[in-house]
Image (cartoon, rainbow, N blue to C red):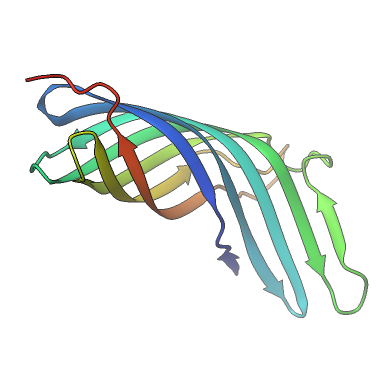
Length: 169
């Protein structure tokens, strides 16, 4: 069975708040992904890196200092790196560049579901924490194959939000 790996990501984003708690947002970032698997005594590891653009929206419930929210976004991710490492005790370790070999698709499309909470530190600065579920919508295996693999990811983020233009009410 496959096991996930713990990795990192970062995103720079912009959020535009509309009336009645509705917001639109977008972001540009980089994320790492992968998995491990052990089959008999052979250990396999996949390491992927994506550049990603996100566009979506959601609803924020403003309670003053504390504001929970829920967002849904679509994403497009361009694959930058795809490596597979096979550690077999009976022979040397083997490294494959899966992109160079044409074994994986170099793009992915999917959905992000993001519940979170913002805590106002001042009129212009908020701290936020959010959980994100990433669901790729296509097979990342290239060509005609009976094998299917897709991106799935969970993340927990803590960040800082800076208001650029606060409209007077």
